[in-house]
Length: 534
Image 1 (spheres, rainbow, N blue to C red):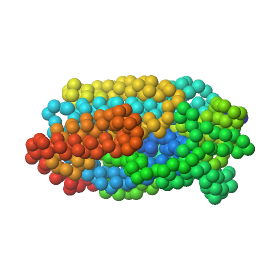
Image 2 (image 1 turned 180 degrees about the vertical axis):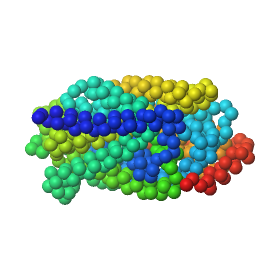
Image 3 (image 1 turned 30 degrees about the vertical axis):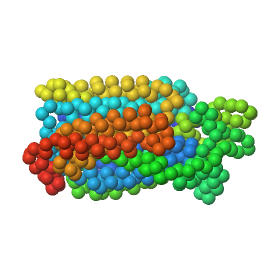
């Protein structure tokens, strides 16, 4: 049996299992929109934790993050992971309980735009519409990143064209998300989180053995100046953004160390701020059965997060130490033995290690972890984006008398439309997953993160402040990314940090400039502090 056939069998087993989950939960999901979008608030702590982390991490965990470590060394990947770990912990610690209570107090909200609108008792659904539109914009980008992951994986695995494999991955995700809704998404994400962590650890363990031990890996990458520095980076020789690689008996990376200052560290760690505004994570707080179960869920989530990201970063570093020269780069340049290597190439490091370390059947199972990562996120993104249109725009603003059946029909049509938009965005096969994800992550973190925190913990927040925070934070992501950051120097920082700060300022200034919230809103704020959900 050929290697390709064995890998196909392994992937087919995984895909069939995910589709079966969708079929099993199809009847329950179709019973009501509450079940379809939020699972009837019935998630247990393990499913809530694993599905939150799996849907959050997406394909960038197994491809994007190792690719960053492989391409530029430890610092960028390490400080990103530290920021994300802190953000995960603080989100579960300070947001989850209050949001679970408040989402129920605020007219049993089942989507994030619902919560914002109900929290401020809107008569005209401005917050509802604005937040839903931002969800559509940024989730279309997120869905694209997941499709890029699936397209790259299948293209590498089967030697087929990127575009045909991109469409294949998209069709499958759409099929089982349409069938099973939130329950199918959450249970499959639980399974996928297990597959992801097993795949990461398997590659780490077998890779270390292949390289001759942990010490041998470290010794090899020490030869690249700045590659293992926490406060520096390996600045490699480049041509049009591609690294120049010299091939002899072993790979030689032309690099010089550069500094990695405090501002850059703060900018990179700002990834953690994104968690406060991530709909796919926050919805798990809405959906858990009991508030007290969030303690166990928090512990499970942070352990999974830290172990998974540590393994992903190490895989990138390890790949730089042990890859054979024949793999590096696709096009020679200049003198014989000199090749170019792009950031997009670097994101294949997990795939290449799996193919090199394992027999084809087991490699297929390990690489199912990549597909699991992409699918666990894209199904969440599609479901939340479709709910923003069907529940918030269609029923919330356009047709309040719409039935559950009509809402779900609009949701499924919207899901297909967003998937098509995601495919269009993902059509460029040179897309770098990490960069695509970083922009959408900043968008959600800045547009929704400040408002989530102020809505939960500052009773003086007003409806005008809420609108200002969403619009100000969301638009600043575009302004900083496209206009200010290209200026370089001290402005060259991740757009999430300044946009998040600007969103907070907008909320405070606009709230203080408008009358205090009405008594009913203040009473609900106090009720959300102490509501018992057992």
